[in-house]
Image 1 (cartoon, rainbow, N blue to C red):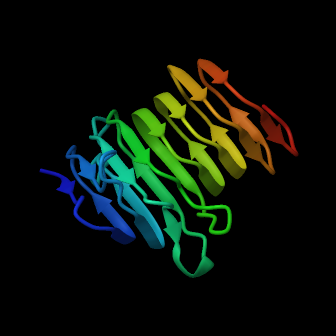
Image 2 (tube, rainbow, N blue to C red; image 1 turned 90 degrees about the vertical axis):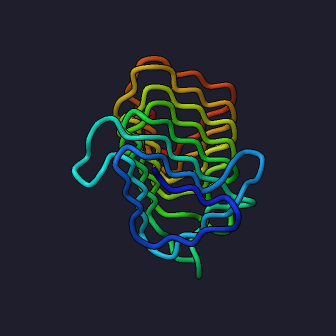
Length: 178
């Protein structure tokens, strides 16, 4: 079950919904680009939103980006499944819109992130291996560790709720750190 597409790049505008089956659009060995042409949702918790879910694996050669300079929302719901994104999400000159992690076991981003708002509604563990550049960064729930291994820059507020937060490098915000 599920969706596996790792032979070429993917264009997405709309929804991919599975019922506890994984969605794989890339791998760490063969990173592919996901281009958003509209607001997009990838959800492995089924149409009714069961809590189990399944893994979501995405990737990018240089960016998960919107076309024509339009900012698009990317919403990911993995339930208890892990969400892994290999490669950059957006770019300094091609910012993606909002990124929303609705639910996940472990969330891992290996590349730089350039977005308007970045929200993690629920996750056990979160790891960012590269820089985060966003307007606002919010984590509303987390039961494990949230690790920021590179710089974090937000032009708006940073609001983090969870268990353990580690920052390996500078955190910069022009607003408040909550």
